[in-house]
Amino acid sequence: TQLLEQSPQFLSIQEGENLTVYCNSSSVFSSLQWYRQEPGEGPVLLVTVVTGGEVKKLKRLTFQFGDARKDSSLHITAAQPGDTGLYLCAAPNAGNNRKLIWGLGTSLAVNP
Amino acid sequence: DVKVTQSSRYLVKRTGEKVFLECVQDMDHENMFWYRQDPGLGLRLIYFSYDVKMKEKGDIPEGYSVSREKKERFSLILESASTNQTSMYLCASSFRGLRKPQHFGDGTRLSIL
Image (cartoon, rainbow over all chains, first blue to last red; front, side, top):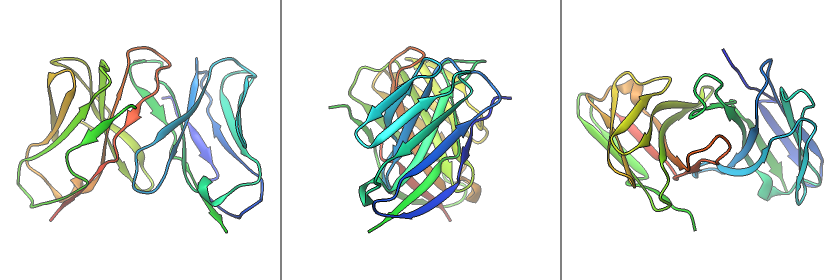
């Protein structure tokens, strides 16, 4: 069974701090997506990583795909209250790639 | 801009009722999905559809059915609602393809009393 484990489950920090959240698996994935879900809304795609070792930047967010394509991290620099939300990672299900496997998410609160 | 619209933001129904949740997308996406989201359990796939009139069971299909008569519309049906189906329901759509992103609606918070 393919699983995506996200850590930490909850994170509460002050504005301006840096943080890293993780998405780990024992399975190899062809790609991995990160989504952010704000309260009262559906998840929104942030980035897709495809190549092992790939690093993508989205303003203050840096995404990395592990060399072996089993894990990924999201680093936020100088967090702002607008970064508050649930960060979800997802990857294609090897058994049926029409479906995604989802992690449980990291709930981030950035306090002013 | 991409739009996935769910018919209700909040819905309250009684045990045993037949409940319909509607989802419409305006992006000509082939794939459509229904998830439920519960604290501690994350997003769980109920059903999905990869073409009109085509459907596949997800991870938790029991107690649910779906209908896709038109490409833009995907309906989730709770045949006989039960209290354990109280949840946030999210609809999503995507183009066919391994790395295509899913686009979500804002969800329907359903309470079964």
